[in-house]
Amino acid sequence: MSPSGMGMVVPEETPVRRARRTGAKPLSEPQVSRLSLYRRQLQARPLASPATIHSHALAALCGTSAAHVRRDLMTIGFNGSPARGYDVEQLIGAIGRELDDPDGQRAALVGVGQLGRALLDYFTTRRPNLRVAAAFDVDPAKTGRVIHGCRVWPLDDLAEVVREQGITVGVLTVPAEAVQEVAERMVAAGVVGFLNFAPVPLRLPARTFVEEMDITTSMERVAYFARALVAGGRRKDEHRAG
Amino acid sequence: MSPSGMGMVVPEETPVRRARRTGAKPLSEPQVSRLSLYRRQLQARPLASPATIHSHALAALCGTSAAHVRRDLMTIGFNGSPARGYDVEQLIGAIGRELDDPDGQRAALVGVGQLGRALLDYFTTRRPNLRVAAAFDVDPAKTGRVIHGCRVWPLDDLAEVVREQGITVGVLTVPAEAVQEVAERMVAAGVVGFLNFAPVPLRLPARTFVEEMDITTSMERVAYFARALVAGGRRKDEHRAG
DNA sequence: ATAGCGCTGTGAACGAAATCACAGCGTTAC
DNA sequence: GTAACGCTGTGATTTCGTTCACAGCGCTAT
Image (cartoon, rainbow over all chains, first blue to last red; front, side, top):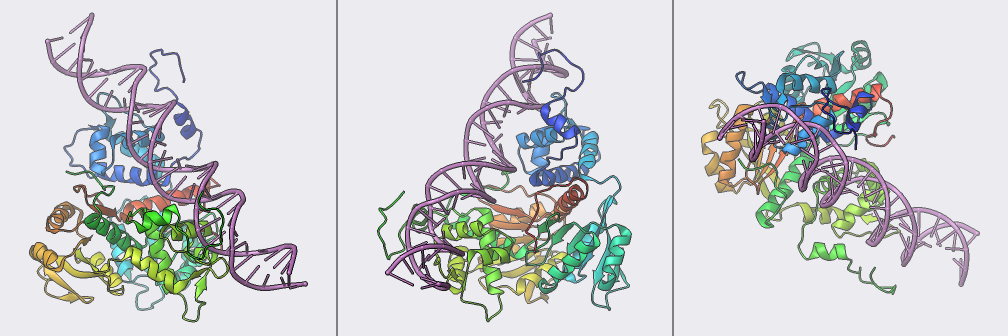
């Protein structure tokens, strides 16, 4: 319990805020995901939208709860006014300060197959602060070209290009048999974060972050709970009704 | 605490086993994901592999812990022998009995763009118990054809085809602007589970299961934790070292 | 002015998933 | 035959994320 209730003007430093300011990075995985979504939804609002937004409204945009939104924004030390809500412009900035590397981050995509091309398409539209800077493939027929604005290099140049461009994030869309070896080569070249679309879990040294994008497993999960819904009856619902 | 320790031959009914047998479906989301992965990894083993496997080995294959494996298999009421481990063939069967619909389940994919085609490619190789039975698109240039073994229908036929084929799972690869409406039409036609690749959360009635496959958010999450690794120092590692 | 409403910020309670730790037992080694 | 080992099955514990509930306050309406 902090101060004797005097009417302060300064936003007042709470324990959580202090933790943030002093450099600890207590953002959890789900929080990062939500913050990313908050920003995207805010940026996607029509131009004529009001300059501020309440936790309820933002929650509705993102399919979550108002309490959740407030807690997340508190965690990054952003505060709004009880009357007006949160200033959208400033909030977008605050989330960026939290999530974005000020110097920018570069990613490499390996495996320019059908899925790889689709993802290149996805990513080219994103902000320059986090961009796919290079793509790689073993197939000589694919290398040398520029696909969706991204140059495709031979896989052999991986280490060199990754090092030169300071790439730290890897997107893996190679066949299952190849993914472990490719990932290890990337780690050796300095990549520490991976988005793995191959249907086999990576075994990488600690000090590495891997996000498994296992589409097959996701499909089976959906199928399972869809079945439970049809048969069983009650099931923790996803996302509120409209 | 159950029985006075008498050497029983029958596997012995524990509370958890009873819960399973009596029809309650207490499988959690992460458990379903892991079971799906266990099965896939077991099926992918070389033909000459031993007929049984220990929790440690399966855990290593799946990037999880032995305790986790044991707990999951206990949950589905499957048990192995302390000496030999788990019978692989029987385990695959047991997981199937848990995850698969005996009558099969059919899915529909909407939005045959680049990503949609890539996913169709992904899914055609799967077992017939859960298959993408139809695809849809608004573009008349794409309809009527068969892509990766899957017929592409005009979007207008959605309700009819979904009902006729008893489709309960939807894969959404349409543009963000269209996804909410498409999803609602599918719900109306009887679809209850969704895999949503559009970068906007769905708002659907309860009794519906939505899995958001938000690639942009995943990318930002990886970038964030990659940065934390490079800068910060300690960070909960993902997946054990080799 | 002043009363009342509704929103933010946050401690506290809750719930669920991961992890620990160990009893029991089959197996192997001697 | 007997001892020691290692694995399974599982209660107990811990950790972590979500949700609740309310104090405090600024705005609006009267």
